[in-house]
Image (cartoon, rainbow, N blue to C red; front, side):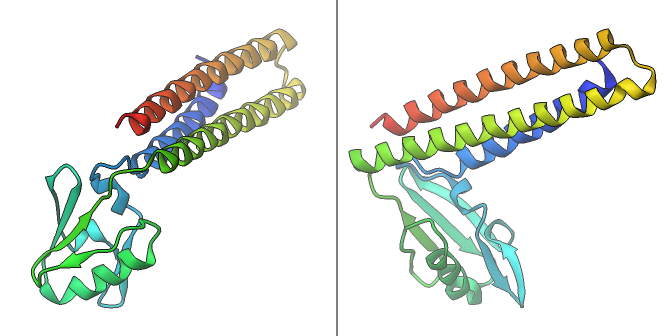
Length: 183
């Protein structure tokens, strides 16, 4: 693979990784510790990820349990979860915080699938934007003693990458949609 094309391949790979992380945080009626990834707790004045202030376990398929390393953090963690978009009210027994995930309704599942498809489309747009940037950069290379054939080859290689990543995104959308719709 051409070095110049490799740069755009890496950018497309990052766009795909971003989408994977987005999908990991979508809850499917099962307890998934990744739904807490974006939540930060005020820990001595510093916004800190929940994973760094306590132990997160999944004792049952629909329950997440957070055991803070310092009991004084229970109120802060609850406050952070309430302020987030997780949509679950935490409960605590003085030692641990529990998040009980409700079973998803059919309507909620359909909404999540729409959201998954929308995020997938955004991922494809990001990939196409990277291709466009690459093609524009390649066109400017004609001034640098690179033949038009070489530029055409780089553009073809970039198009193949775009197609490959587009198919991967389609596959991810299908898999995540099936996961959500499975009761």
